[in-house]
Image (cartoon, rainbow, N blue to C red; front, side):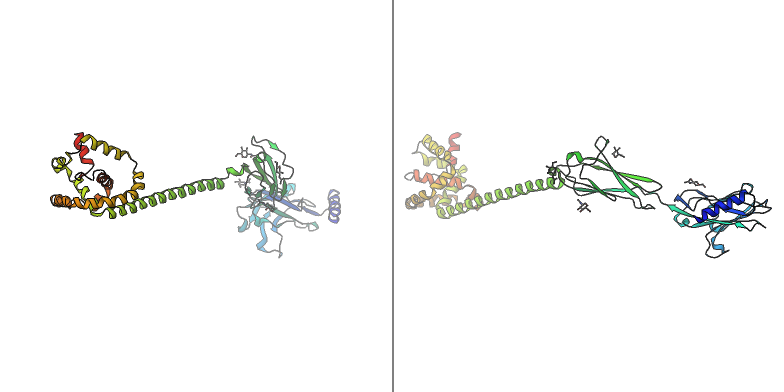
Length: 409
Ligand SMILES: *[C@@H]1O[C@H](CO)[C@@H](O)[C@H](O)[C@H]1NC(C)=O
Ligand SMILES: *[C@@H]1O[C@H](CO)[C@@H](O)[C@H](O)[C@H]1NC(C)=O
Ligand SMILES: *[C@@H]1O[C@H](CO)[C@@H](O)[C@H](O)[C@H]1NC(C)=O
Ligand SMILES: *[C@@H]1O[C@H](CO)[C@@H](O)[C@H](O)[C@H]1NC(C)=O
């Protein structure tokens, strides 16, 4: 207030022609954005017609006449401006002595230029009045483009926070959000929506929450914005739960496969055990007919003679009946037949002498048939057992299959 009254008084004095130098910087504070090219104005009114004017710009001096704070000096008589090396290339003086103008121009200001600047005018013989004025330069930083993020899951019924932060900005930016629907038309927020600084909180999401959310970061000098797309999904569409379901199905399938494999193994093992038992029980008597069967071909003619007393069709029918019987049925009957078999075995021992004769004939071929082969032919052997039961009174039949081949031929 006081200084204003003083200024008015001085202006009146000047206008009235009562002489005293008046130097003035119109504003106390100048605000510009970092990087801008700026002008700090300085005016002066001499008391008379000066022969020499010296204009000096300094940073507000800690020490008077300190070279450290000197920016430039202008001498009117030679129209020369001396710029200190520190500011060379960055500053210039826009001077017009006749009009009382000596403005300082600074290009591309930085945060380091946040200082008090002083304009001093010296006129020989004019040392009354106000010879110096100062102003503060405030360098502002525009908000950097903010970063928008979503906190939480954008699913029906969930709450989410949208955050918005500019890393730079001086003074500190303020944030505002707008909501746009999927056709990019701006709309009002849902009633429960809240904002706190750069954070927008959305509650109990629905399909209608989806859209674009734009945050604008603003300070005195400029603004910048970011744009977030929110698409609210039903919880089941969530990638995690979908993966979980797929994983579960795959797991169940694997378990199923393991169970099936185990069952098959177990069944197979059981069958093998039973076969093994069967082979052990049948012992020698079982092997003999099998060998006959296998070795039939070369001796086919010879063996055929032994069937003379059975009609070929009879034998063939019997064979086919047996073939059609289910294998498992035969297995279940096996124990019953075994008791019969013990009886038959006694009969068989009688026939054994006959076998011994034939054994001599086939002994040279025995080596050709290994144990595995015998296993594979268990079926045939079993037919042979049956054959013995049916044909107990007849001469032994070498094998079930060969006779059939013969008759088919
Ligand atoms: C500042 O001036 C320089 C030339 O001195 C120019 O290249 C630059 O673009 C100007 N900057 C602004 C923000 O006007
Ligand atoms: C959202 O912000 C509020 C307040 O900071 C917090 O309590 C809440 O847990 C946040 N929600 C999510 C989903 O991050
Ligand atoms: C969320 O919204 C649904 C309808 O859109 C409503 O039925 C439910 O009560 C709301 N839940 C909360 C916690 O507000
Ligand atoms: C937000 O982004 C979307 C897609 O990128 C665009 O269509 C929309 O115009 C943007 N909205 C604003 C306000 O920038």
